Length: 97
Image (cartoon, rainbow, N blue to C red; front, side):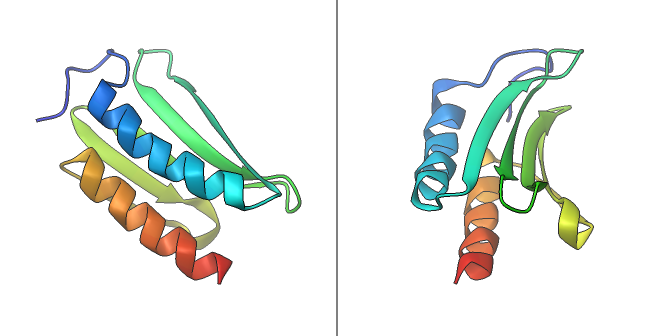
């Protein structure tokens, strides 16, 4: 079960975020930023500096992980961070190839 709302990313969650960061470093015009909502829930976005848009947003909200692809107008809720990042990476790799 995900941590309580309003808490920082756990070490396990951060290790999965690291997988996203690794992909971002391989794409010259992508960057990743992480922060917190006003309620203290953590989020990260992958931003495309060339296209000036958010490629992906991932957040923990109410003990669920929400992955959003704004350009595709698509989002999913996942029970684990691993599943959320696995799905995010699969989609991101498909759009970079």
